[in-house]
Length: 368
Image (cartoon, rainbow, N blue to C red):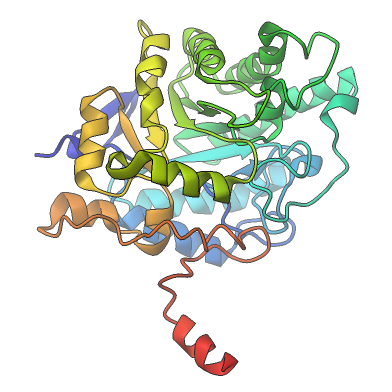
């Protein structure tokens, strides 16, 4: 049996295999952030596809934190009813599949994936102290709603130049108060958010954290700083850390990292040793996301320190990839070519695989 098919226990939650569907914005909620039938259909196919745990696209914890027009929201109790339907779909049709909701605040427009994110006038270095406290509390109450909706875990987006990442990165945080300057100060927002979440959901509810391994920009953090952050979060009790990287121009960055990784595939596999050392002695699991396409690459990562394989783009075009690799004789790598066309329009259009869209040939014929 492949190591990918071995279960893993986080607190009282058993995850049936090592496939973690990494988050991406779906742009399938309605304009007000409520769950739609299109969103339920997406997660029906993902759940039925065999992943051990699914992490949803980021849901905004405050109105000002919403980055995309048709993004899920979780800043009010009114969203819980729709989120319950989403959890029910996954649990009913996923054969033991688990579900985590990713929560986030976009921070300053222009960072993050920069696919045409909404500009809501949020400026990190201008925000008042009392507003920082309000946002910290918003993360906590958002996590409480996730738990009430029947999800199995909450996942925090602390990477890619969004708000938590902006506080951590010295190139984007120029504050001169307790929230900026030294790494200890820049970490303060991250640790306060974790504490607020834990206060709301209790000690037994799993909390995941997505974080960078490097910012890949001049003046940004590298692995040494992020290992320090990971160590602090792990000591506080975070249950899983998902490794990623970058704060801007993600499409260009991923194309470059793909070439550098070559047959190793994993963009951030180089960081596993340092991160594993940082969380030694804790119960924190480690997931690696980015560029992983083949069974040999996945098994290599699991045998060398990773606990979960994070995949996203392959599941956009092939949601049943885990079932195919684990339960069929067809062991070909994902058909995803990392063309990034799916990422180029997700800010304003529903998520889909553009390369293998069956309607593509029809559109090409019309445009001639």
